[in-house]
Length: 141
Image 1 (cartoon, rainbow, N blue to C red):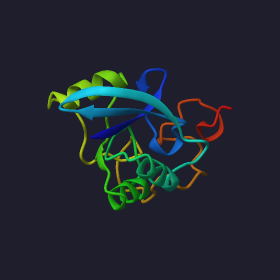
Image 2: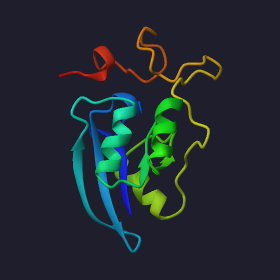
Image 3: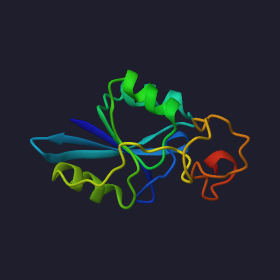
């Protein structure tokens, strides 16, 4: 299995569409055999699913994620564990132990459902969607 986690400073980054890095883990016989950092190279949202697919990823752990990105991951055959917080390495260990706390109904907007956006509308002034002060659209380069 090849697993990716949205990644920033050892933690699970909380907005899939704006993640700048993934930590990629190779899992063999229930153990991590290798890990490395994969840059998103400034790509966002739907393009990230293609990037992960090209890297051979079959499982993703992330925080918030919009419906469009969820659909792109599903079409790429990538299993999603969303709504996860905390340390990336700990989340992977929990997944391997069968005790990962995740939200199967995760949405990008952290304050309720029904807004009808999939986090693709960048004119929402930083509400929800986990911008967390990383500059415009999380691209603090």
